[in-house]
Length: 463
Ligand code: ATP
Ligand code: MG
Image 1 (cartoon, rainbow, N blue to C red):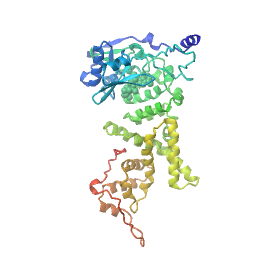
Image 2: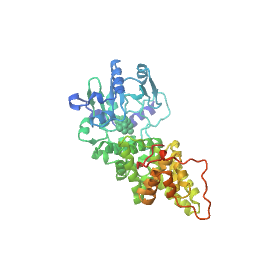
Image 3: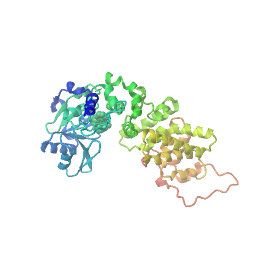
Image 4: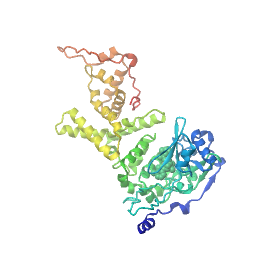
């Protein structure tokens, strides 16, 4: 009992919000969101919940994006119904999550996430006499699994612009934290005390940078001020969450400006070796810049981008430096490359939790690089028929563009790809006199009709 009381007294978060939150209702004529831009499934789910007597709203990023004239990535619904009540109402739904349970409601081929309003207070643990820490030593929240009311749900969110509720029936926006005004003036403002909120969840440091770039917003001065000082807190975040957030950042369509911002705010240390080391070397910086610009363009054109390809890029200069150390200590080139690849990847598994399912792609792209420099005999033909050729080829072209390889090599490969088979044979150096030309046997050369065309995309379709 005493322990419980002490915990309550000392660990309860400052009620940021409760004193400052004041509800503003914004009518359709002011916000101007057109219903036809809202995902029909999310609309239907929120409406059905309301018809069943609950309150239910479209929340978070979707409302924000619609107000900014952007196309939302996903539509989330928040309600005062419990997960069981939601599940009961929608036949095609399932409760997911152990720590904080929410419901996935299936609608056609889509899935909409429906969550019960959450509060920010620590859980009230009745029975235990064992002290359960509510935050870690740095203030990171270890529990955020309490239900709350709508206002508490607004307050526990990260930025004011992310805390708007859209009522699809009344077509009104409910705004407890002046997020609507912040959207109008394009200010990204954290909810509550910035230091405390970053300490509770350091991933918000990265979200601030990502969302400001993506939304073209300015980070409010007080929200921005502690970012650099608190950057070391990221070391304390579980690697899998860091990976998810880094991936979101890299696939945001604004990866280049995000990476530049991360660096400017001192958030790059320890995130990825490329951010630590590469950006400080001119050749590495050029390679990353070209690659990320390429990735951003692909995303804007709705072309697929493979995370494996992206991580192969981000870690390449780490591999290069490890590779040359291995060779300097007497290892032969190829075994040295394989050792370097293994070492770089195993370090990243620990640090950033790059899932192992990407390893094969990453390794193949790297391992094929020396083969582009061997332009004799049948080697280029064999390379062409490799299933990962396209990705490795795009990667090699980025190396040429950044100055790591000669422009001539890149041009040669472009010409080789667009040539017919006869021309290709002519492009390869003649066999040395006295040496019998080796006949290629069963391996089939790609015919002219299956000729791989360079698309200069900097990213593969076939991963
Ligand atoms: P995106 O456009 O990338 O989807 P988003 O803001 O929708 O941006 P999500 O990760 O989809 O990001 O999160 C949905 C909502 O959940 C956010 O708008 C915000 O209200 C809340 N949220 C997400 N992450 C956090 C966090 N770390 N702390 C507090 N609230 C968060
Ligand atoms: Mg979202």
